[in-house]
Structures are given as structure tokens and as C-alpha cells.
Image 1 (cartoon, rainbow, N blue to C red):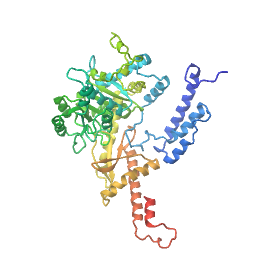
Image 2 (cartoon, helix red, strand yellow):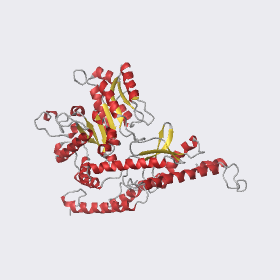
Image 3 (tube, rainbow, N blue to C red):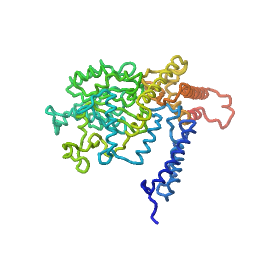
Image 4 (cartoon, helix red, strand yellow):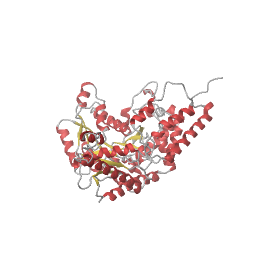
Length: 522
């Protein structure tokens, strides 16, 4: 008798259904039962569990393998749906998107060429047009275009790649080569703020730009790009004999959740002919907002835009897109291969629509399907209401902490970020600085709440990124109460350590020296 296949096919379709039902039932039970966002297992404990699995051992079969995998992975995963999770830009996901994820994983479409994807290519392109229209880009022949990517980092990289290729084009429209290309490459500059995403600087490195190619533009007190400072930087670059490759602004900075002044920056870019890229990975959901869409006024004047659907569109990772105002710009990424998208087919009257012509990737998942299902099930206005809900929640937390005697707000936000420190009267800056990483670590190790830490204006602080539309103000207050109690406990421990003469120190023979005790507690 032939050995049963491990592959999904006609003969195993019934087994596939049973397998998926078992996995879904298990995950559903775990989601319903989650009482905290993380189990609190230490890295050493998790490493031991991982190392104990013999990947070269005898097969155990699909049911046992999946049960074992669930015990290892799902039991120790971080649950973004739990209101105690408030650390990074991770969101709970819509049910229709999860269903679409299962569909696309089983069918396993690759949307690089039309003959591998057929209708999937057309659906992705429809969503590109829909997003471009929401941005305000012109559509139709020669108008906007775009492509789905793995995330904002890849979208930003591709945008800057396109900007670089434009900057390395001669007056005759031909691509520069040889010595002329190398000479121009060394003079290219990218203007961005220090509040922008780190992927801008890393992309400059990957694109072969000089170490000093990214010019930091000063910000205002709220962390937004200062248009006056940008104007001066543009003049300085020109006077130095260098070339502005791109100006990068952020619609939703990672730390502060602030939106740069898009309109005034666009005015300056238009005046000098500079490529304007808007990184709206975080703030892209404002495109659907019923009450905050005005924060993106001017985004339609950008040359390229990054949008992460797996942030404020509540999609499973990964789902991002790069949009360009003019289709010709995206064509700068095209590379032909005889076996895939031969150049001679590009001139045919009705050539296949090969999305690999637009992408830095070749094999690429049909991640657009999740957004398609979400828009059909929830509606664009429904997604926009969820975006407004998390922004409203952050506003309520800011109001709640405005006069708090212990938790001090550090900066305003346009989106769903809360930046704060535990610093009651009597706790100096140095001591409050030291509490930030320790509070975060204690909470993480307990598994009861996850918060992030960062540095604002030279001072470390704690950060909440609120991306759960179902979370309430009381949920966030619960997280903040854990921050308070943890900080008080750490301060109490410090006070015990600092006692010069604990009552039993001279009588107990095994009591460690004061310095040893201090190191143990810290």
C-alpha cells in the first residue's frame, strides 16, 4: 500500500479539513482563556524547551506534531488581543482577515507573474487603486501605481531605491553609468528627522549612499519636522554641491505617534523638485478615519507613500504597500528575466500583468486577500472607526494622566501613543531614568503586562502603543497601576539596600556583605 502523502491535495482534502479544525479549535480555546499577554517563561526556560525537540528524530505524524508545536509555540506566544499588551505596533486582527489567511496559505498563490496568480493579481491591483484613491493620487493611465510588500521597512527601501534611480538619471532621460553614476551617487542626500523610522538610514546604507547621506532635519517641540529647518537644509545641500535624492516625512512617528506637517513640506519639495516620500506605516489608517483624515492633508502631493495594513488596518502580518503617484516611477524597479517576465512581451498589445515588474521580491504571498476580505466584511468606515477608537483611547489616557502625581506625560501624540515616566515628587531624574528599564523588565517577566521603553529628548521613558479597539480606559488604567506598584516595589527595595545598619547585620553570621546584597537585589 502506498505511503499516505503529507501534501495537501485531492487525496488528503478530508485530512486537511480535520487538521485545520483541530488547530482552529485549539487556538480559539487559547485566545478565549488568555488571562495575561505572556506566560512569563524565562528565555532560559524557553530555550530548553526548543533545544529538547529532536528535529532529526523519527516522524510523529501530523496530529501529534501539531499538538507538540502548539504546546511549544502557542503556549508561550505573546497575545496582542489581550488588553495588557501595549508595547509595540502590534494589533489584534480582524476575523475575516484570519479566514483569508487560512485560504491563501492553503492555495499558496505567488503573485509574481500572472500565470501563477490570475485573479489574485487583479485583486491586488484593485486594492492598490483603492488605496491610491484614498490617498488622493490620480488613477488611470499613467497615474498612480503600487505593490504590496512585506512591511514598512521594505516599502521605504523600495521608495528610496526609486528615488535614487530618478536622481541617477541624466538630463536626456537615460540612466547614468560608469564614472558619472559613481560621482553622482556620492553626492546624493536624504533629508529626514531623527524621529523617522530607522529603515531610512539602513536603506541609505543598502543603496550604497555615503555614510553622511542622511541629513537630520530638526524638529519642533512635539517631534514634528520643522519646515523652516527643512528649507535651510535644502539650501545647505545645494550650496555644498550635493543633490537632494529624497525628503522623507513621517505620518505617525514610531515613538511619538506624530504626523509631520505634510502640506508645508510638500510646498518646499515642489519648489526645488525634490522627491517627497511619506512614511505612513503607522498613520496610514487615518486614510479611513471619519474624524482625523485631515491630519494627512498634503499626502496626495507625495511622490511615494508607505502604508502598513498590518498596523492600523488590523491585518495579520505581513501586509504593507508602497504607492507611487506616477506609474513610470515604479517601473524603475523592473528587471526582466527570460524565464519569468521576458522583455519582448512587455510591448505586446495585451501583455500579461506581471507584478514582479513592480516588486523587489519574486515569490510573494497574496497578502492583499486579507485586506480585501476585511473591507468586504467590516467596510472601510468600520476600519476607520477602529482607528478612531484607538486614538480616542490614547486621548482619554492623556487626559487621565494630566494631573497624575506619579506618572508624568512627556509628549503629545496625534495617534495612539502614550509616553510617560514614573517620577513622583522626591524622585530625581537619575533615579527615574534607572526605573524605566527595570519596571519594563519586571512587567515582562511577570507576563501580566507588556509596555515598551524608548528615549525622548535624552530621557528614557515608558511607552504605550494602543492598537486594540476593544480595550477600555479601565484596561489601560490596570496596566498603569501595575507600572505604579512595580515602581514602588523597586524603590522600596532600594531603600532597604541603602540602610546603613540593618538591625540584624551584626548578629547573623550568614548575612552577606552590604555590597553583595545590593548586587543581588539589583
